[in-house]
Length: 342
Image (tube, rainbow, N blue to C red):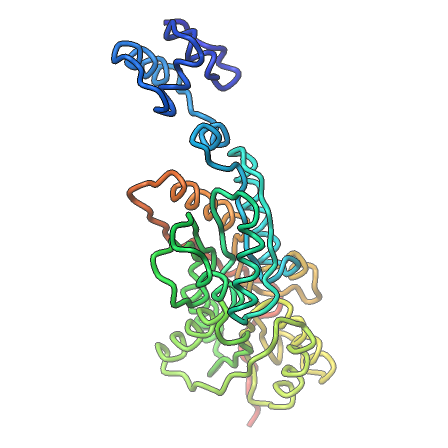
């Protein structure tokens, strides 16, 4: 059999030429839409193997009568984690030949979530990815029809089972961050958490686990919103407490608010107080002092979520998704615990 130009991927026409059959015959073998003789099927399959041909996902979808569009349901498209996850999904989908449609979930109310799902499914979509970072995502996940190929990206808890989920190992990363602070000599670590029911619960549970493992005191934690101003207001209370020497924040925006409050209270970072954020937004490295943070690869989360959805759409028998790792990036906002003067 002949070979194709190694500088470009083989096409269905290359397979047909190598097998000595027509392009429609190759298409029939790939789709199974019309019976093909065993001899011709064998020739086509041999050519596919020799050329390393991989059918384009969009072409497969059209051949099977399946739409070449996927839907993404998200509560927010401007926050860093959401935005980068959407970018990863779109990149992977576009590479595979799919268009991406984004529908925003306006409320956690079940009827609002059902309406958002209805808007998404008003278009012919092959599958759905839900960004399950918060209660909005949970509500949308539970409103999806059972027979629709779907996956979830994010750690937020949900009562819905049976839908494959891709997560980032946030609890383990939070444990590493808090253990790092304790290792610097801080007797305990205060926590500014994000709203309950969000993906950030893994961060809070990791904070607790690290304190328990070190037999360190567990202070009450404050709950912020997703906004830096909320972190600032909580930070003012923390800055007024001389016993606060280390703070682990639910995200970088909250951490930046805490840093501002510490600066206004003339508590030096990291000499008096160490602060760690979460997500490692680009702004974290540019802040003064540069913010120590937990880095999450949201774009990879999006790409892997699409690959998991593609496996669902292809009805793969085994769907496994290992949590993606997150890592602590040490910068200038963390240091040894201050020495107490007697």
